[in-house]
Image 1: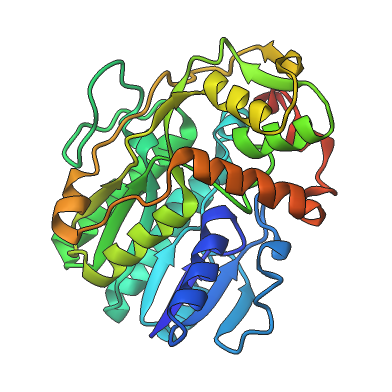
Image 2: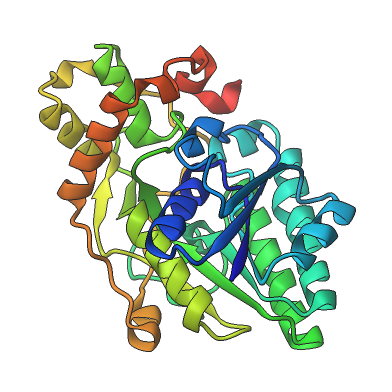
Length: 328
């Protein structure tokens, strides 16, 4: 089987490629990435020589290129997206182009070529929840331009599945963490700054709550959906591991034997959702998937990876570690 992975130089995409080539040696993987913010060739430097892996630099909005690549593949897994919420506040336009127009380009081609597609979406489409948890039938309520573009892409996919019987499936996951994540995100930023004994910015009071999942478990869930999911359906992927940001940061500092004096509370970003929560009962019931990695185990693995792989992040710009990136 040949998989076309879009955005495979990014965090989740690169981990997915690593896992597929390691666990399923018969798979071939074609990776297309535009090398925008968050893409890092070093994420895949260990598999560049693998004969089952091929890389193409390109944009998913390029119809001619995507027609060619999709024609060579058996299934498309669309990780490609502008995903940095803070930056969608300062400039939403790239998010509209990549997350909506790019998804449309792929969707239209897979429909005409009769190929299956897995769309990687997000729990942010449901917006902030004070109480309760979202299931696959919950109402969309996106708060950021990023979340709105992902919700819009989902609606477009649903319309194609109904109107054209497109072979598309949507997955939504909670907050991922693990190796190869871009340094602007909370956990890698905390690890990197703590390793340098620099101040660690925390938005507001640090009370915002997310459900945290180790990226390896997410990759397993995507593979389960790709193998056994039903076209036209969506699957929520969560870990029932809700923690607030300040707890996460304090755990990292404790594991790294660093002082909490490094914590610095900064201005909160506009429209910062308080809490995300999803139920993964459907994927557990229908596809028999469940998380395997305990949070503390995953966090220890993540810290070790960043400290052992400083070459991946040592050249990052100061803007990436900015305390208020939506102002950049």
